[in-house]
Amino acid sequence: MYQVYSLIDITKTDQHRHKSDDRCAVDQQSNYNVFEQCLMLRSNVNIHSRPVTLHRDVKEFAFGSRYQGQHQIWFMEFDTEQPDYVTVQQLQEDFHMVPMISNLKESININNNIFITQDPQNTNIVFYKNSTLKNTE
Image: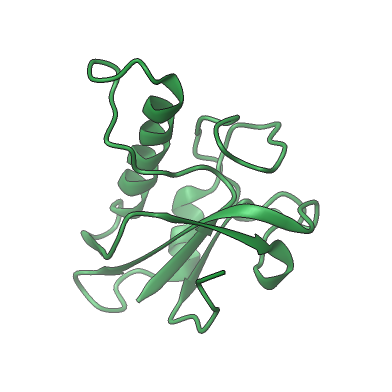
């Protein structure tokens, strides 16, 4: 089982340009779509639930050092069809520098509009495998 924590809004709203006038909800869904497509670059995945929003201190996670204190964090779990077929390192490689839409419901300041997984200062999405981190408030 893999866990993902994101400081970027990946809310699954099921809203699309032709279905909704709510620009924020449409952009949130766009981010979720990009997120899901990146997850499936190497293997089909089974997503166990929609991303949920936590309000947590980021020091519990491996986010970049520029992020400190309490922030909105999007969390979800998934697994791959083939156990152990995809590694956390591969997920980090697949997501690094992928464009996304910012200024949605994030509590961080984003100045680059990309997912970052390999920068000690700016990492904004992290992956774990079989984590024992507490995923509730």
